[in-house]
Image 1: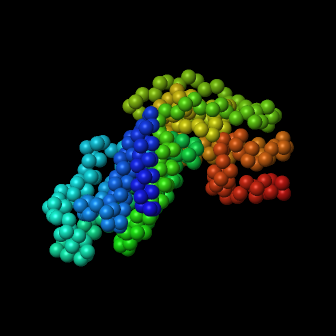
Image 2: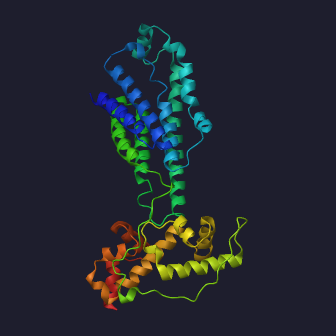
Image 3: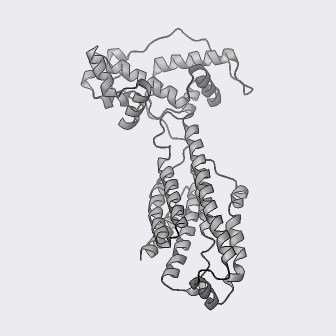
Length: 371
């Protein structure tokens, strides 16, 4: 009953994805994957319940398709979807195996039953080869998917100041779970394998359907927080005017233009405190500075020695240290001050504060009181 319920859930989630009005490439891949998982689970259910023996053997190639789907889905969710032609190459082992076993599938049901009941008698070499291929496929695609996710995380720190909602930690857990399923495959326990698959359907259905685009255009950004904008210690720090800068050419950024852009960046950050916008992105900031994102990213990397994520969050920490030590801040909680400075969660604030200062926020406040 568990397996049949998993089949129903997989097909329901597949239809739910296909009914979305604005389907992404990731949605389409996930829908196809859920359909394949449902069919695979259904074949196993028939095998376990001794129903429809004429379908015996059709499930043999299916373990070779789940690894490619995991990788293709990971690439699509991180907005690095492969072309249809390249994606098709990953399906070749599955299709090749299916074609290879056609003669076996054409055998009478009685002969196929005999082979299964006698542990693949007459097909020992094929069983060994397919087992090696399945294990190798699992290891290879779990590795490739993990590498793709790591590249994604490195990329978003160059473009976003808040990565909690787009770091895809759930996808990393999903990859881990796939690895566990493959370990169970190696241990040759089909009941545990397909029981884990049912749980996998629940997990990927919940998170996959909720997943939205990451690098797509975002709606209007929220205004800067005004929690304590009228306090005397939050006044703008004025710098001397910066002369109008030239338009940066696509051919590259000159040393003088880089210094000029860096100077304007510092002025804007000090005067407008754009880092207090918790959703600030490289694209938004480059638009504000009338430059290209790659130029701004290069300036931050070279002049500040940081990626965009570290640069913005370091400014947020410095702002927090400034406002938190002011007498006017005593009427606010540390979390309220952190949110004012651009952090959108207590966990991210505590984690980054300790990374920068080596202290927890409360320990830092204690040292300032003792001083």
